Length: 183
Image 1 (cartoon, rainbow, N blue to C red):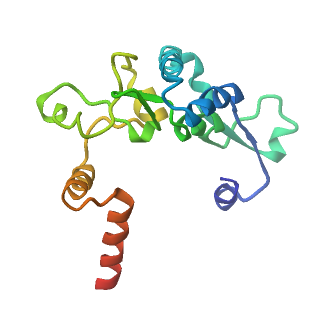
Image 2 (cartoon, rainbow, N blue to C red):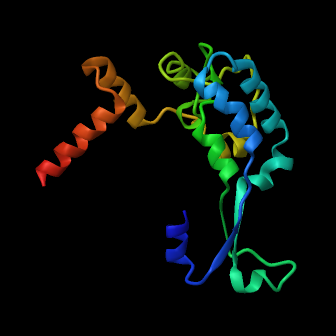
């Protein structure tokens, strides 16, 4: 992120980041053998959810101007960005879904039980609520990026998968190729 930050901050800066190597070590093993660590990941998810208000400060890294940081004991950050810890939460497959698998948070849905969305539960990976109970929308949506509803795009991808056996990446490559050639 340093190149993007350098474009918006025109002087030397310092990033005070938060890293959690312990989290990375715990979920790294689940990346290699996803079903073996299902219970561990469920407990870890429930713990982070329950402790969100105490842990939330570690999800943001602070940007300080270098000139003010060295001389000031209480400098004010000029900007906040997602910390390495927050990015790590999203990068690994550690969220338990129905079917006994672990997925990356951005690939998981937490669908309400109403009739409209419950019909999609069998087609999209959704949180295994028998293993964890989540209700903090800030943690669920803003930190992890778990989806709360099925979008039109997802429905389109599902229909194309069923009808033409096109995976999401191939589908959007085809759509983009078609849009480019029409111009």
